[in-house]
Length: 156
Image (cartoon, rainbow, N blue to C red; front, side, top):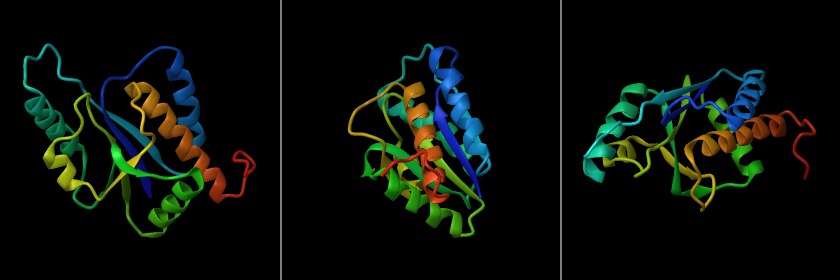
């Protein structure tokens, strides 16, 4: 099963990008993993709802009908790292071809994206910059894979 992280934003350069790429390489040891950006809307005077709708349309173009879609959303269910690893095991055992995790824009997700979602997960009740959200997600995905393999990265 392929796992993708689809997000509103841009490819960042800077201090966190190296750490993010390090986790991406580690994740790819365990499973196919891709990150795909939907560009920010630039210099826009759109209303919040219209911006969410346009960003949502960009996100939905990246998602296939057969994909399982998980929105990373502040209102989603919070899981421990062990519970997230169990979630990943269930998904990998499901026979699905692709599991998409999605990070929305500054104003969140459009109604259309929410309707397409299969589940909502929260990384934290706090709000983080997008690059940090990607880094936290990548670290947790890597941690989940090491938990499933019984490797010593995660200490109980």
